[in-house]
Each structure stands twice: as structure tokens, then as C-alpha cells.
Length: 290
Image 1 (cartoon, rainbow, N blue to C red):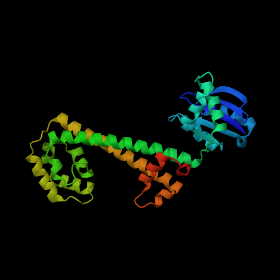
Image 2 (spheres, one colour):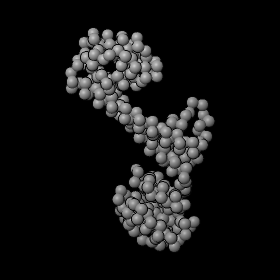
Image 3 (cartoon, rainbow, N blue to C red):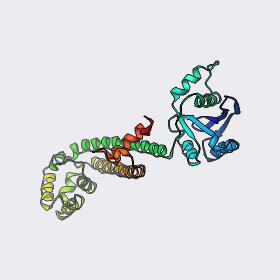
Image 4 (cartoon, one colour):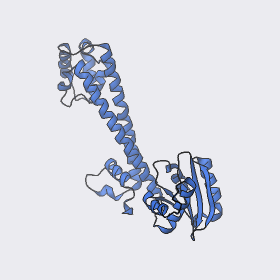
């Protein structure tokens, strides 16, 4: 067998080839983190035969993701090594140096001496789940901050509104109303049929004309402000909230598609759905590792 050690960086990677006896067959060489660089790597390794090659690289943030996906798609035997494994080998190095070129040899020799597991297409799907799950969490946190911000603005514009709706401010019907009429003055000046229709359509029939009438009376008696600057902040806050709403739905749709393809046993657990199941699998990785 031949062992390929790859040291990962943002723009350029280094690779070397070592035999099973530890002899350096290909000295460390540089290749770029793009398609041309990946093809250069394959051309250097072509003479060894892919079934005889074991390629290893350290788990380093996201910089290796493209290369791992590329190599797996080419049916190469790829291992992603925990840096803890290579640190022991590095400590045994007499010169105690850590450079890109030296690290490729350290990684290759770690493959020879340490147990390893090959990356599969399923692992790629789990990697995608992890990225999507973490991006979903970021969007949820962002949306929460925006909702708090909108509530603060409404405390000054129309403080009575959040108590008028039993479910609070943050629902489609309220957002639809505030997009067209973000101040008490604008709500109270609307013809009754318009807010009634607006609320009925956006709430799927949950709100009726009588509630629209009560809402207009509420706006007429409000102690809130009809300041134009505040009204602009309200409408733009609603727009900002609706963007992560759409993004989260798109992310969850992609996560569901990946989970359907995986057909994981985790879906047999009561209470586990595609989203929380995908979040768990994305973080723990392939459960067969344990």
C-alpha cells in the first residue's frame, strides 16, 4: 500500500507519498485548492493505482471539504484524521518542527501506524447536514434578535398591539398589517374592509371583520407614536424578519431531502423528525464510528 499525506490550508495544500515501509516516494509538493490543483494531485498519484492508495488529511475547519468531496467522487480511499492522532507522531519527530511539508509526512506515517476509517458518500451527506444545521441555527438566532428589535419599536409605536393578538406580535397577520400600516394613524385611517380582508387572508380565516373593527378602535385610542422614522424602522424590521424565515424553510427542505436519501435508523425513534434527526446526525457524524 501507498500512503498519501495532505496538509490542508486555505489557498494551497501540500502532499507527499510514503510506502508502507515508510520510504518517501514523492517528496512534498504544492497544489492549489481548486479544480486544477485537485487534477494535479490525481495526475501525480495516477501511477500508483487508486486501489493501492490511502489518502489522509487532518480535520481542519472547512478548508478540506471541497477536496474530500472531490476525492470521494473519484472513488479514492480517503481518511479524515483527528489532529490528536498526528500530534503524537509529531512529538516523536526529532527536530520538533511543524511546517506544511513536514506535516504531510507526519500524516502519511500516522496512516501507517494508526487505525483509520475511509470516508464514504454517506459521510459527505452528513457533512452537508452539519453545515446546513449550523447555518439554520445562525438564522434562528438572527431572527430572534430581529423580533426583539421589532418588539422594542412597537412599544413606542403601538404598545397595545402585542396584547390585542393572543399569539403576540410575531405572526403573519400582524406582519402583513404592519407592512402596510406601521403606525396608529395609518391603521385608524384605513377603510374597515381593507384591514379586515388583510387579516383574514394572512391568517387563513382566523381573524374576522369584527376583530378588524376592534383593531381600528384600538389604534384610534393608542398612546403610541406615528413618527415617520419609527414607522420606517417597523416596516424594515418586518422585512428583515421575513428573510431568515424563508431561508430557514429552504434549509429545512434541503435537510429533509438529505435525510430521505440516508434512510437513517434514527428516524425510527419516536419524536425524531427530519430536522432534529438531521441536526443530531450532522453533529455526531457517522454513528457506526462508535
